[in-house]
Length: 196
Image 1 (cartoon, rainbow, N blue to C red):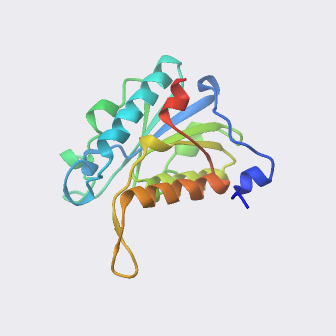
Image 2 (cartoon, rainbow, N blue to C red; image 1 turned 45 degrees about the vertical axis):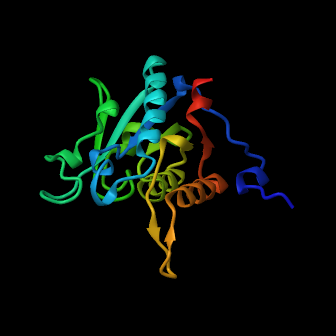
């Protein structure tokens, strides 16, 4: 039997949102992921895809919100240091909202929900890391009643240790997390889908 998502079984096939009705949320595109212990193997490809989507959203006048993780001074994601700064090609422009968070969910103790609006709002998510802050945020978005979409190739993650002492490659983890999100939480599309 061909696998089907819970959304499909319920008769809800995800559709691309219209930029005029959607908000674009960029999650944790910060320098910390370009070097050091959190360097992501597919960061450059994901950034290039995110740039294309961000440009399309800007041209079409979509609401754009940048979420940036705020670590403590001297630690990972120190917002006063290089690692905590936004990645150059994806830096916020004037008029684009910036939300700082201190937990994996972009909604936890932030005003992101107030900025997005009520239930039924279409939200396009993309960012780092797929299995962590992207997944946690998209799952939480369901509780707010948002209609979520994830730009798959604009997200990336890193290798993780497995429980048997081996390694789960980043590509496998990324694909598995997107499959899990597609089951109930979000439509999964590529950057090219948004540019077509």
